[in-house]
Image (cartoon, rainbow, N blue to C red; front, side):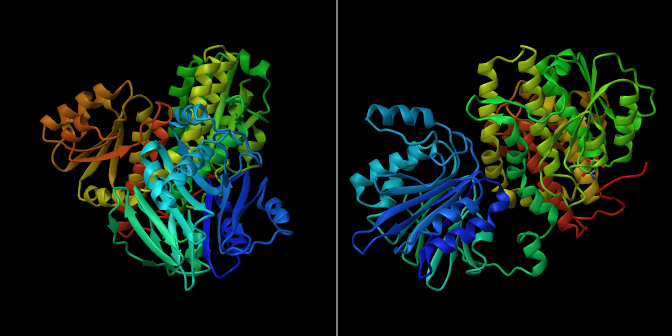
Length: 613
Ligand code: M6R
């Protein structure tokens, strides 16, 4: 996801910003840029340099540039609104006001209409430029950047982390956020604002984390943080003391936690090769299967093990709904021995993070022998399953070190959503308009994931309650059901606690007998077509003295009323909900395991790659 660096201080802002952006490269990006003050004191102007592609392209352009100012901002962009290009790269500048943005402004179309009616002209296709217009309009009136931000904030809806500068205030940066992270490093004679502490750590280890709905005012080397209502907030300065091991883990205590926090980027990277940003459509490039082959398919099997199998179950819901093709899911160790019946025109999809899981590989070989067309979804390129399948889509998550799979799971869910959309459109089941709306929803997803992950501390507190139960029943309906399965698996493998994943409609058929005050029900219950029914299930459990933790959409009073604990997710479409819901279930399991003192990265008796039966 986009990276942000802002700087005020004695050093050359160009050097600090580019070095900081380099540290944020892991987030993924397709263009980059800087805006730095230049000119004699009293008459300084913003000079912007941007480039499509890797940071090396930007650095090349910057080689011949010098800046006399002490203030600047920089950005690495991962395209959401508008294709990757120099004109869409940040910073966006309007009349001496420049900003960088990570996230999505949901009401950008309304804002654009309003600005256009006032005669504004636009130099990019981004939602971010519109915020620069709003701030530029406000600062003309307020003559003060901070006040301009206060005026503009009520006009913005969505997830954002923004850092802005105005050339008339050459020592001021204003940063504000709702969702994506922002952290401010306080050095000797310098202040660095960034989307990640990695960009700061080589200059100072004193940092202040900005919370949602706060506005940070950097004036010279002084930092003040206010609420959106204008009240000064007393912020704690934290000292980051990373060991060499932590540097490898990017400051996280475990690889698993790092990988959980990498998920917005993992999902963005999984989707990037397959989305045409101009047409807002899915183009499965380098699939290795022809459109003709895919058009002929009238049955799909998805085969995998463990977490990859639960992704397969989610894929069944999505593909059947979008493409109207019957989908069967199979645990690979069952598929390979049950004598599966593979009719002609069958596609067998095998999912495997490692690409080496023995049962999944055997299932793939069997499917080929039985005449099926095969497609692999793997993370590790050139692994056995990747090589042997007829076609392939990559998870593109980057290396997953923690034995418990996290980022590979959400990347697979994203890829399966795109695959479902692609098949739906190919078979005339998904209109171009519906596809474009679904693509918009998927593009908004990484920023929504960041805003969920920002509540990690809150999930950690909820996890402390979970560990005292005898067991946990994870429940869900529809595409939330595989998230219940995955939540239970995560808790088993990390916390060594007994947990079961159930389709909520099954409660009356047995699990209800388990309910007492030592068994927790964890219901994945976003606001979708199944919501009312899941709520009724919770009421039945409640009436029998059950303890309930629920995961729902927004501030849901009815769910809260029936639950002992409530975890909220942003409002999203049915296809996006399971990816968002995966985050709290992973974090709950992580924090319980951590509190119990377990080896989170290498749970007992488990291996990352299961290459034997
Ligand atoms: O590499 P694969 O995706 O084929 O691995 C499948 C399972 O072994 C794996 O998902 C396992 O269940 C993990 N420990 C889950 O966290």
